[in-house]
Length: 88
Image (cartoon, rainbow, N blue to C red; front, side, top):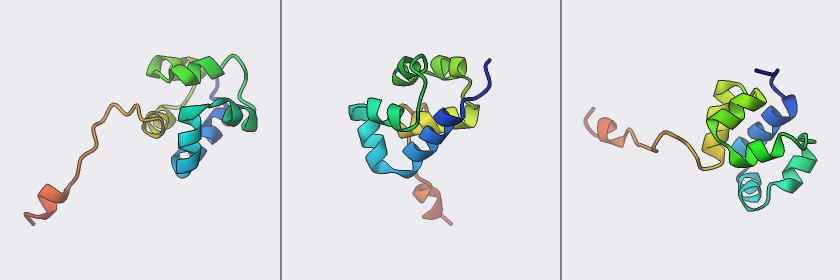
């Protein structure tokens, strides 16, 4: 595994914090790739967005999870604790 690219981690943090960036990434990621100076060889892997692709890039596992959430590919289904709170 290669060292984690700081630019990719910064991009992921932006995606998590900014709904407009998430929408922009889904529609056309290239401007964000340019803004964060993402290397050309990493861009197709980020577009693919699989866990294997993120591993190949060297993205930290916690950042992988954030990326999957931000790009709508979360392996975990959304849930609520309301059921439990209503019974307390």
